[in-house]
Length: 262
Image (cartoon, rainbow, N blue to C red):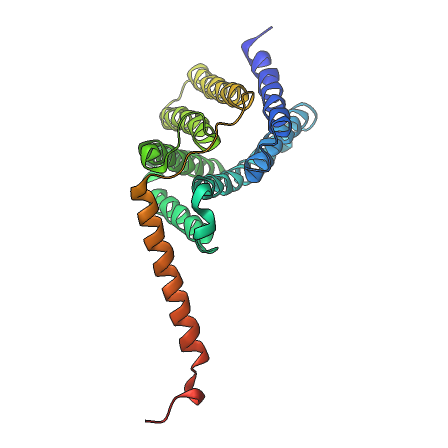
């Protein structure tokens, strides 16, 4: 059995294991977007396999659509992870916080986009150019997100047994390999070398899935309270947001026709 055949089977089997464990551990309640993303990758692998076998001419279009949807869901997962990190203190935060987190992550991706466009991509057709550009941008964003989350783990009172950091670690590892292979592929001309790098990326993805499966096979660690420094900062942010909202409400209700006489 060839390595390609093994990888074709290892991917969907590992994805099915992750989805099953998310259901078994009821982790889908905590991370619904990650559950949707995991389910989508499983279904996407089956669709890609069927298209590659029965309609190979449509494989490129299918792959491009799948890649766009995949990156969109990954963005939602990043926002979900960022919001889930604040779980112990979420009741004290304004509801708009999740939208602010989404805007911040989207802004970070927009800032990365111009720098992720390698000149080597210009030799590829437009579709592949955009695909490689998008993949590199999202890979850099995921790596930075993981580094930020891991770097602030002490302040956020999360560890390697917490679901948020486990998911971010898997994404960070796969993204780092994906980023490396994308850069190398853009400068690679030999087909055998390109195939080897592509196989390396698939192997890293399977390793990521196995790590998630091993993590979700264990019970979730009890979430610790935030550090006093983090609690003080969040209270200040929540207080400022509340004051701004009250001031905005008062100014709206006071309208031009309700001004007091001097």
